[in-house]
Image (cartoon, rainbow, N blue to C red; front, side, top):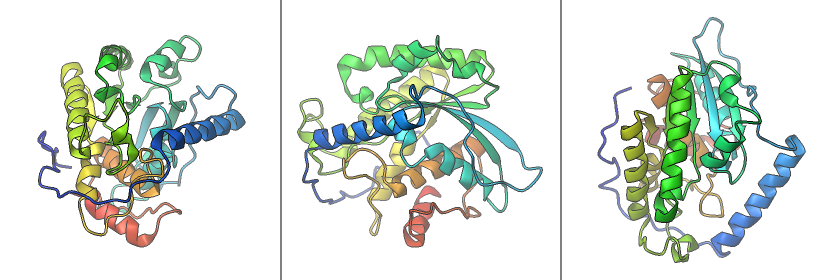
Length: 287
């Protein structure tokens, strides 16, 4: 894969018109958070754990890549690690077996994950080729929290590097255009998603440059894809979490960045995504 330029790929996009959600985003986010916590309780009383994720079997003797995901609901929704692994396993030209681990909990920033390492350290669970670090999505745009965010990210990046693994920063996306998020006190200064994405990019790319960590530009691809006619909705109803289409786009961008492979031979389509929407997302992620 050719390296993406540092300049944003969505500078020439047009404004996307979307329907405003009818329920305040904060209430939807709260309901979603409660749902995710209930799900976590059913699966694991603590949910801070590391395990391998079952995925589609790649052909025999394919290269193996190990990836640890540290984060929260943006990684958990629609099982992003599993989608990435299935994409890799079913690439008909250059299949890869991705053995993925989790260190995830809804609504949990990297600073809290760092504190919990004393109880269960995912970095000691095995040798990871990459460790993907996904912090709380709005920390880059809340000035009062930037100091703690930068400190905890540096802690993780340094610890990851000491194990011989490569740290990866997950660049998230702006809130859904037209949603009530832009009426909240913390975000009302942003008049457009483009403005919010610019700030997210500035912070995450700055961290990546200063810490020597890879940045996966997911948010830039979201902004670029949403500007095109016929784009499927990348958001859930809460205006922040990814829909199945949003997770598929995110997974494809991760696959390209982690493996360096192009996407023309990717055959995997998530079962909850139509062939038409999948084809659109695949074209968009191939830019």
